[in-house]
Length: 513
View 1: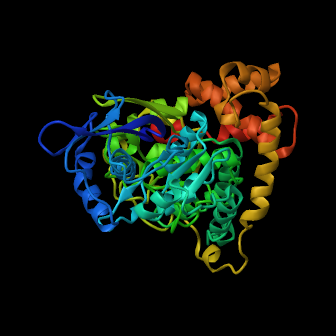
View 2: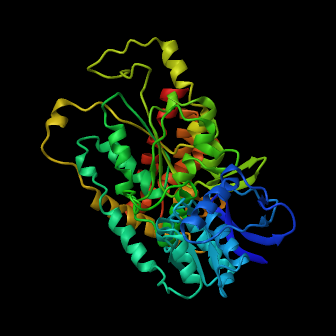
């Protein structure tokens, strides 16, 4: 007898339909044959399924049984086919009568006891089920909590193989999980971030640069000695970024789900992601990839912040792979197992010391680096990568007076309110386009929304020539000036906005040329 169950295969951050076909009663030696390009984890499912069936009161077939994961040209990975395979065997052998089996998409790992365990890519599976017009989705508990965020498809929490059988046979009805309850739980988890910009003392110029960068989604480089507060500022940036919209939430959670991270037990899922990889990270770890391409750090930072501390300590090859994703907001990875395109529209925040010892220009510490050592240290960051960083800001060492000051800095809430107002202006400006922030403007949009008069054009040309800036830097200055004008509530770019934007590029020549 043949049984067919709909499941899914994860490809990058999206899911493709997989039909789990189970045919039993074939002539030949009694054994279980699994075909359809499975990986090692899928091939081991027969042992897990056998024990789960036995411990749940069912029997394995005593005849030749073939299990096909179709289509056969898509590589299948992970244990998510355990539950559909077990259900397929039960239907094929007549141990389960499930008249509405085709109405559901099913995925889940089985323990030897028959209990279910979470799987990767629950959000992608929910979106696939919705696009296929399925009545519902059967998933283990923690995976079901993620999938319930997707509206338009009923998600049922399955705790064991026995519970799945009783539900599909109509013996035990289940209520689908509520999307509203899942979103409410997500918002509650977001409330406990625990950090605030009020903890930052002094550094007024740096705080202003961060506000401008966040308001327009611009990339930021902070340069200063150890202890200046660069990392402390960076870790508080998510607290001033406006909360993502529901669709952005789903994109963020979908990527993290595809990477094997779940909502349950994770702090701050309601905030924008903040990723801070160590400088020893590999190219694949940063960009994404693997035998079966999956998301890397830049994709995990989608709609959030990628913080690279000690920027020159990263491998040159790892830094150079950032150039194209910074421009396009997505990265395409090709491997023998297939090609996937992963989203990576992130805000890059980087920090570095001015020299190897960190004290060049510090009035309280003597720098012992030679000019050649300083030049080699700075040369680790290429000009093309630096061009893609919109704002460069010095973070000087704090004085003892600043550290002892009892007056706290401005908290995150009013900063976020100003940034939200600037973002709202940008949303209106870019209505009907895929652009959501000034940093993502195309050349045509720059010409339209960043127009300046002849006097300002002469001023910008003079600055470009004196600082030896590239054509890419020209566009980025205009984008930053547009953001500064948005923060000020101005309709057009004025001289103060342009001058402030220019001074955020002044480190190009001072430090790197």
